[in-house]
Image 1: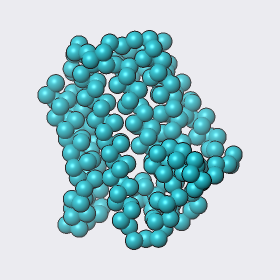
Image 2 (image 1 turned 135 degrees about the vertical axis):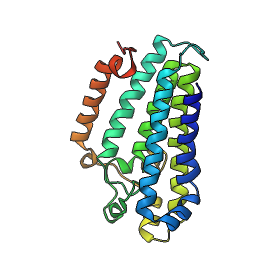
Image 3 (image 1 turned 90 degrees about the horizontal axis):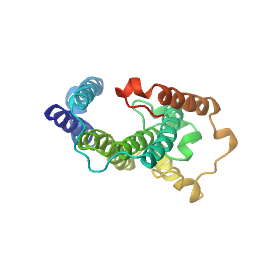
Image 4 (image 1 turned 180 degrees about the vertical axis):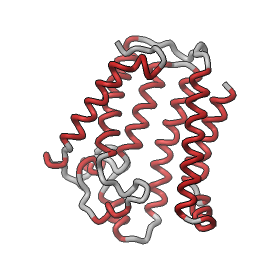
Length: 225
């Protein structure tokens, strides 16, 4: 359990204690943007690896609630939505992604009309689904870490971008939303059939099918059937 706790704390510190605070800008000024990105990536992947290793070694017997068939059904639905959102978000040019600000020069389209953080929402839904399905202390700690980083990461990112002087950022923040569908409901965006990335949608369903059929291999024995 100690390794899992250490990995989760390191992951939280890396993402919310460094990337999501003014310390990020200070480090970039001190060592340069590229060296900072390399060091940050090293720490992020290192802490993620420690989390995964620690989680794989912890016995899952301390339950806050016990797994059940209704919980599995909810998780299957959330996992489908999560993976489709992740794939389509990855295939969308998004200025909030690292070193992708040139996307500000393009019109808001596709998944960005639904939310400006599709990848983060995909991760959040993935984490929530697994928390619901498992119910044990180790899973709550492991997947809860991803949920916290995703949700508060979105808030932190929005706070930074709202402080930007670039009028392109101001326009992007004003015409998109963090909460899914909020920009559409408020009339700031209008979704069209051309906004649907059909290849991404098919790929998302394909990824879900692969995860569904091979989940016992990936998870170490837990089947979705």
